[in-house]
Amino acid sequence: MPRQVIHALLLLAAPHVLAAAFGIALYQDRGIPVEVSVNVSRGSGYVNIEGLYYYDDSLWYSTVFACWEAAISAGADPFSYNYTVYIAPINASRSLAGPSLSLAVYIATYSTITGSPVNSSVVYTGTVAPGGVVDFVGGVEQKAEGAARYGFKLFVYPALQHLEFKMVEKPRLIGVYGSLVPVLEITPIQIRNITAIEVGNVYQAAAATTGRYNATANIERLREVLTRTNATAPQYKIDALINEVNRAVKKAKRLAAQQPRYHDALAAGIGKALAYVEISRNITAASTEALPRALAEVLTPYFYVLFVTDFERGRAVAEIYLATLRNITEALRPAVGADNICDAAVAHAYIHTAEMAKSTAERSLTSYMLTGDVTYAAEASYWYSQAAYYLWKAILLSREPTTGLDLNKTLAKIGRYVQTAVEYGDVYSRATGVTSPQLLEGGAKLNLLRALAAQQEGRGEAALGYYIEALASLLAYFAIHPGFPNTTGVKYMHYLDAVAHVAAPVKSIYAAEAAALAEAAGLNDTKILYMAKIHACIIAEKLAVAGDGAPHRMLRYVNYQAPAPPPQPPGEMPVEITALGLLLLVFIVKVLHHLSRRR
Image (cartoon, rainbow, N blue to C red; front, side, top):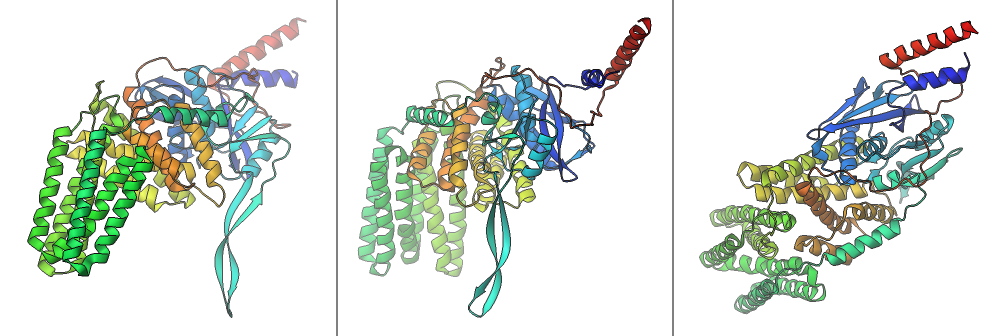
């Protein structure tokens, strides 16, 4: 029988050929195609992987988020489906490790949910992370060679990986001595015999075959959306806080005159406070951060001087002031609704944080009273000031909703998304060695612990706010890591492009503040974190209001070609045949044999 006929019959027997996307894995230091298809059914967000004997945690978590991000891309609730992911390496071991297959999982899942076709002449490699960014993978050069060898026409891989970044230790002479110091080596990667496209997020990957994608236009649209997200705190609250800062400055000046020994410390606090007030005048949307910070800056030295010069008076002043602010926040405590989810939830989280800060301040003040160690007085003054800062933040963010919300359902979905993302971040940081004390440890994990504690206390609104803050840190972590010199700008642009696909005008004081601070910040981790706060708000709102509406296609495959058979290298045949396909093959072979005998 002709080879072409046998090849066609084998393709008929191979499972999920037409609906499959192709990834590529390293096997014995060679790039080997991996067929990926996904069955999506009604469910609760559960992901099951079939076809492999072994896979590691990074493959598991990246697959989970590839499925969830595909649903979000389609405008659907990721927790309204279950996903069965079929993974079939071609002519290779069924044990896989690493997250690089997740980009192919995303393409297959998105195709299944939306009914979008998949071009099987394209092969994908990339790490899908929360928020839809595509992070680095290993072995790009070998994978590109393998893709070309197997006859694929287009190789889609992560942005910036046309360069290989490697930290190596090299000797450096210091005086008469030498030492080994870490040095970054950047080496160009050679990709030959195949067309290659770099992508920085899943949306670019999905559009790789269209030839029509304009990231610049998307980012400009995001800018317009953020401009329409122009919510600010009521002016009467802003005016009240400005008056409060001015009163605190006057009190600090009087205290400096009475206690010249502490004049410099008080003057420094006053100077910082006035600088923040000036920022609030120049950047109106940043007032909700600048003015509470101004108050904290002047209260810190003011409380300290009171504690060390007149302990009883200082303690009374701090306690009465915080009790007054707490009463105001109780009176303003907002319900969490669909149209104020970020503002209200984060306000509740700030109130909860203020209570913890106050408790820490009281313990430090007790230690100072017992030991006379002024270090404890300094700690107490700092934490009392932080409590005031968070309470004022809560006052400024508090606003009532106009649309209701199922808090328990929303908390369950966002909590699950964030907890899984934190676990993914842990696995990713261990696998890559890329840690971030600010974003991963001090941001995501800390806020996750606070969310769980608030839930145990029955304070679901505060838990939701902590989840949103944790998610912002995680999104920023995955958006910029692993980071190397001169890569932050490129990663930031790809991240903005991803945010643009889900962005919609949101009336949120929290998001407007973050947008203003991002605009003012330099190109660094802080700028990306502020953008991630906006992104976290958008994701939280989408998960909160997601219903059972029909998914939609975010992109059109205008240059779509009919799916071709899975490419095979010369002389090789596919080895995976289902039982049903085998029976079909045997039947067709017998029919052909019978027909040939009749001739």
